[in-house]
Length: 345
Image (tube, rainbow, N blue to C red; front, side, top):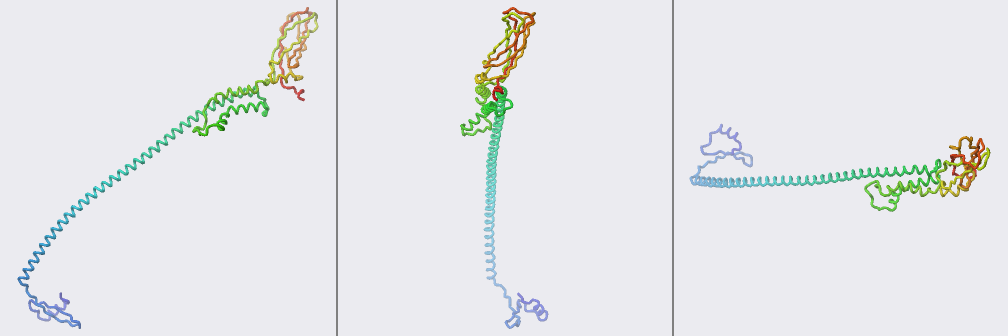
């Protein structure tokens, strides 16, 4: 409360101490002068002390009531905090359980999607494998039957084709027939088949595939069955030799062989008009009587109006009384059925 305790101490040291019960004060006036004041300290009365005691008692009761209220508030706050903690714990546990349920449900949906995708993929792979295996089987069967059709064409080309003439009508016809029976069903299916597309890249064998080899052969026979396909005709003709007169003179023998049955119908009329048809004949065997010294001389062969004429002489070393059979002679011959070059020129 002193404004300048040091100064008071200094003054107390120089002056006499103030009377007991007086409280010294120093006041600073507006003009700056300092004035010392002495304020007596009166004693408290009994009523004031009683009032002070009652005030202290009331204050203690208020403090006690406030303390009880604060204790009750603290207990309520504790219960609230405990309830909040319990509620928060329950909510947190519920949220954790909900999160777990959502995670489990999400994982289950994901697992179901993955399982479904894997199942679908496996089904597609198995289906594709079945398609590939079936396609390989179909391709193998088609390849087998196509090879059979090609194999049937080899003897047809050998029988009806013209060697060394690729653009010959017979070769072209045989090639076209082979292509028709190989891919004709595919062409027909592509032009007139259903628009529904099959999952198999190769069509399986059907009645067309099984009939193709036979159909190829029948087509070639239908086209070339009446044509002359064998250029050279060969045969062996047995001639019974007999003499009609007596003497050692040569006996002329003439044998005619009808070739019409060996010529194809389409070529028969043309063959009968051919001139100077190439023909070769030779004696393959002779079974003549012994002791006559018989020989075959002057063998000649010619074709006139589609008939083969064989002419030869029989000469004996001794006279033979005729008419008399002398035995048999086998004559082998070969005739060219193609149109002679001289006739063409």
